[in-house]
Length: 155
Image (tube, rainbow, N blue to C red; front, side, top):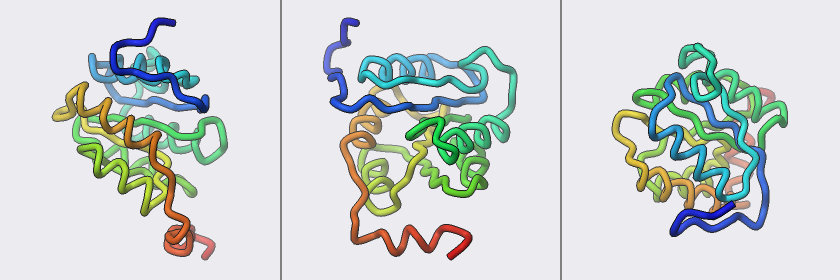
């Protein structure tokens, strides 16, 4: 596969779920970006040809991550808010609605976020690419492990 300019194949292949309540040029661009990075992409919702709404897409993507069917996920809805709320209802999911690379990196660093959520309304392809770069380049801060553990319902 020929990589687009500025894209680098990841050293680690991850299973990445991509879900949205709408199939748009942005969801298509991000799906291609993920594949060009060498990740195995599972589509959920309209990007996969399914007619389902944001609440169900968010829940299904969250379940894929929580149950190990995906290592991480990228999720979309018009604002990103509804999809992130739906995904965060699934135990073990830490979905973060991000608007730029710094926010995406912070969500990984301090919150060990495992679902990156973007709004379809305002996110450009370039900003989405920058967020993906930050998301995949950033590891959680071990000093935050106790805080993150407090988010789980059994604690």
